[in-house]
Amino acid sequence: MTFADMTWLNPPPASDMKDGTLTLSTGERTDFWRKTHYGFIRDTGHFLHHPVSGDFTAEVTIAARYEALYDQAGLMLRIDETRWVKAGIEYTDGQPFFSTVITNDRSDWSIVALPFPADRLRLRLTRHDDAVRVQVRRPDGSWLMTRLGYLDPGPAQIGVMACSPERAGFTADFHQYTCGPAIDRTLHD
Image (cartoon, rainbow, N blue to C red):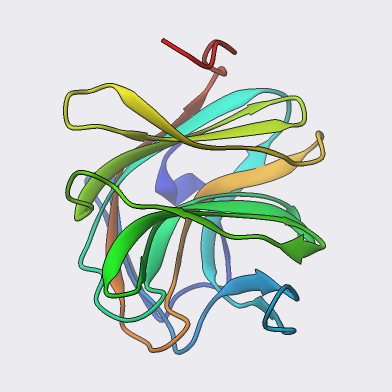
């Protein structure tokens, strides 16, 4: 699967696909969120996706400079506007964190401080039936699990996403996207 074979939900104002890399620049105040804490619904983030069913693992490497509150880039698994997962780097409290939002009508949010730089990271999202596992690769090549959560099984879309809820013009590069058979269900190496 290449980025050229994928479909946009909310295309960004600027994007370029070259040599297997997608570079995009976000629109003004884009986001994915539903109800919890803030009371609003946002479904305006940029999501480049393809269909998927059954168990799978998707991976991508992301390079970006996170500078404004809530700048974010990562992977998204989406059934529809009320059921989805987004995971990646998000800038909050003056630094980039690994962030995961799982939405089943209402969004939740978890963040993990990373003990290594976040400017270029490889992340992975695996689906096993109704379980979604999110991981980030450590500099030594091992994988750190950041979240295990629930999402309804069934047909969905998987791909890359980026948002900038407080501004426009956040730029992210996505490299080496893959999606294939699910990794083993074993949670601990």
